[in-house]
Length: 416
Image (cartoon, rainbow, N blue to C red):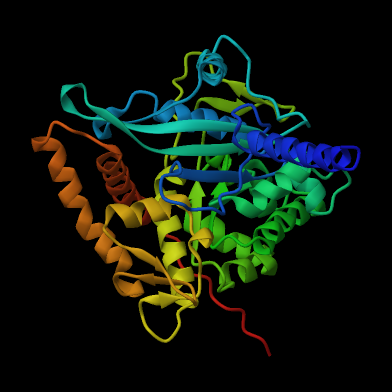
């Protein structure tokens, strides 16, 4: 008995440790990171799109978040709405209400340093007869702009949660401050202003994202000395003239999708700069944000295009075989594949898809009418039908964006 007791005690201790470990893995009270990496794609996990707007302090990231939420609060003809938890809903409604009130001089301040906050929105679709279903979850990371500046080379604190999110986001949106850009184009900016812009572009180049949106915030500020509004093609062309680095950024072949999106969360005429450079709301003006939905609407088609391009780049001889694993693809891409009946099979070399890789996007587009037609005749309205409605809406809005805001491709610089 004296010999067996230590052995028995050791076995009991090992069993308890194993039980504790397994309980911790399955317990709902386990501590989870604020921003979960998307590098897993098992069927049945929540559909999710992770968005990160990469910009420095004061560029308007939080304001654009409020504008986007406001745009999707009531659904409209598309029936697409966004909802969030009660505390976040209250916070956003208070921000929106104070922005709209021109008697209140409130405008959102820069996000203070601290842990990045993830705003999580359910993207829901309403249809006739009270039917509704969720398409996916949209996660939006809000952080102090000082963290991006520190990563770009400025003095300041590095934040590990922000750096992890930067690596794992589905779509990356670099935010160029419209006020800074105007001063650069008019020759009124200090040299460090252009350095800041180019440092932001360098951050975008360093990341692994294939889909990059370059958002120009405060678009209402982009006017010449006579007050004439500048066109997007004109702004991009002028910026290329003063920054060879910007031209090289646009010429980089790594980006499968590089979209430049002008956004004004204030809209034209809602706020103006005073003599000290502060934005002041105009009494009685209406808050009509400009283009705040385009970063969201263009994201879904661009994520899909980027993932298909990545699959094609890793193709193994046959057109429907790739060395990639499912973990490299965005969860919304896998959900759209499932909707279109595109089967992913694991092989010894990676993935085999049910249709040729180059035909995937066409297959997705062809599948949408089937799902959209179901909603009119069947009482059931499920997540696939909701996703089809959102994807169809996003394709239509992306086409509208391309028609109105097309930017000519950059011209390579001639040497010699």
